Structure formats: structure tokens, C-alpha cells
Length: 103
Length: 211
Image (cartoon, rainbow over the protein chains, first blue to last red):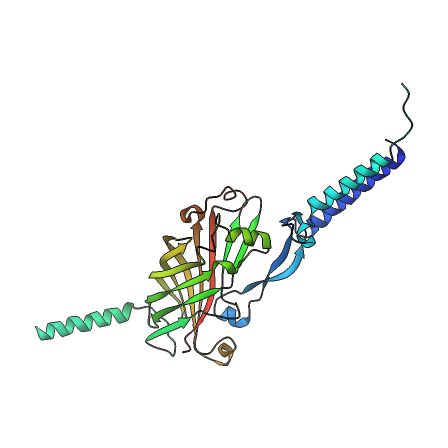
């Protein structure tokens, strides 16, 4: 493995680790979500002994994609890591030594 | 004979009055509370937990009504239904799967219903608040099973504050019970892995007796 290939490999590992750390900081959800539950309980609700939660649109980064219908559903640790590994693999291949090794 | 009959009748009325448990509020007699709320604040939710993932589902499409004598909560009768199509879990694709024939089959069974049969173990928490066990028929995917919910009922007389929600007196109902999916014909391979076999159902609804 030459110097350039080592740089690409190190950069790929750093980027994938960063993606994993970001996922963990976002709550380590298994699947990417497009909506989250928000508590909208009012004082009157409390007097009536009930709670009121509603789903609101919010992107939550997950480990796996939740669907294929939109980019927001596809983005996840698995899809980004897969993309980074593919790019790293292509670059490592392109940076290979083109001189034929002698026996 | 007539005197004995009168004494027995009086005793029966006295006993019924003494042991009747209900709300001590301004209203009296039989009241009907409707749970329809176009703002979607009335809701039932479910919770599934597995080692892989916790899923929280929410349905805002609640309909139904209950009727009871304010002084005797055991007279409670009625039903609450939810629209299967209104259930959300935070992931659109999962919501679509849940409506499929392998899960709740929303096309064939568009509603999930709870029909109240009896009320027991009533405890008076406050003049306007009671806890009780509410037993009824839970109908899901065409299957009817009897379930018992732990319920808390809160009665609020009409006031300026309650009018912000709806006209009339308000009844808040909070209830919880468990449902085993296989009892209702939901038996696909995901149950027990990504989705729990036993689902906790919570009801949070407010009804109004305005006519």
C-alpha cells in the first residue's frame, strides 16, 4: 500500500468514525426518522388527567435507512458508510502503483 | 305486607345510594360524552419494545361516546373507535406496512374498537376524579377479545377554561391495557423481533357533554 492509498484509507476510517459518533450523539436510533413525538400537553389536559403528544416533522439520523422514497429516508449510518467505503475503494484502486512488481 | 315491602324498597334504595360511586359535581343524572375532536387532540397510542427497537405509535382519529349516571360510574356504557389509517409511527414506510393485510389490514378492517361492558374496582380519588377497571370487548382485525383497562376518569364542570377545548362539561379518560398481537391474527415473522408480541395500548381522550 503506497502513501496515497494510506491517506485515503485513514481519511475513510476517520469519516466513517465521525458518522458513527454523530449518529450516537443524535440518540442512536436504529432507523432514520422523518417525524418525532413532541409533548403538547396543556394545563387543561393535566387537569383532565390526559397527555397530548403529536408527531411533528423532524429529521433523526438513524443506523439504517427507513425507506427509499426520499433522500431524507435514505440517509443513515449504513448508507453513508457504504458510500464512503465505495469511494475509498475506488480511490485506493486508482492510486495503486502502476509499475509491475519484479519477482 | 305493604309496610315490609316499603321498608325493603327503602333499604334497597339506601344501599344503592350508599354504595354507588360517582362524581360529586354540579351535573346529575345520565350524561352523554362525545369524544369526537376535529383538532386530533384525542388520541390512542401503542408502545412496542424489543431489544432492537422501541416503537411508539399514535392515532388521532378517535371517535365514540360514553353514557353514565354521574352518581354511579358503574353505569358507564359506550364505545371508542380509532381509525387504523390515522396511526403514525414516525416512519412513513412503516406506517404503510402497518396498514397492509399482514398487519392490521386497514382496507378490510378500517377501525379498532373498544366496547365497554362493565366497570369494577372503583376508587374515588377526588370529588371529580375516579380510578376503575374498565372491562370491554376489544375488536381488532375482525377478532373480538375481552380486555380490562386500568382507567382514570376526571370530570370538569364547564368553565371559561374548559370552553377553550369544547363547550359543556368535560370528561378526561386515561386508560392503559395490553394486547397480544397473535390473539388478533397478527402473526408475521417480524412480530417478536422488531415488534413486540405484547403491545401496551394507552388511551388519552377528552369528551364533552354539549348537545
